[in-house]
Length: 194
Image (cartoon, rainbow, N blue to C red; front, side):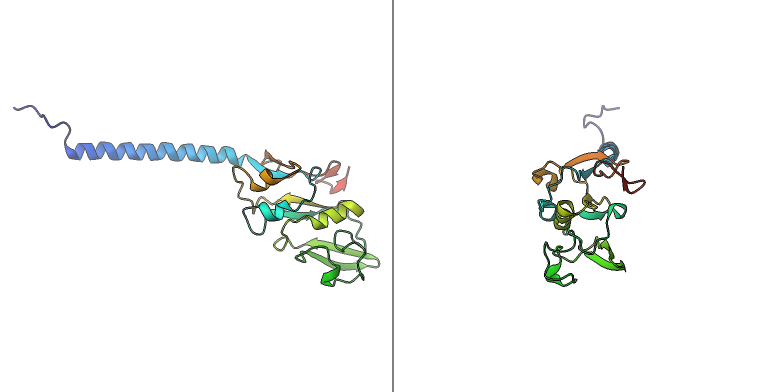
């Protein structure tokens, strides 16, 4: 019987190659999923105690509108008639006219509760994360408005473009189980300053 001088037959070569490609795909896919699951353990978040309301959250996020939204801690709010997070400083009149509102996209909804109290709610789909309301609330109010990265919107990029542009270095990766950062002394469980 003559000796085979051609090496492995073509059919055997294709079968071995297909196995090798399949094995590489499985190993690569497993590695990718392992990396993604490690990344999913950490999320980007904004520390409200470091935030300077510079406006970069609205302009530097890869999403339009930004994944950063204003959050209202209702338990801290004074429900003031003259809300410094809602109205421009020294408004012409205490009306909801556009020229009197601080929010450039009218994302804050004002509802009368009883004299002299009003409730202020954030319409998150409208909010662009500019921080103008937060700045007003911190400067003249009690700071019940603050910015947070909303994880249901955030892409959790490897390098957050807002974090890279943030002059206050207020962004960091936090454990996904922690999720949100709050102002010092604020308890999300009770919703009150501690």
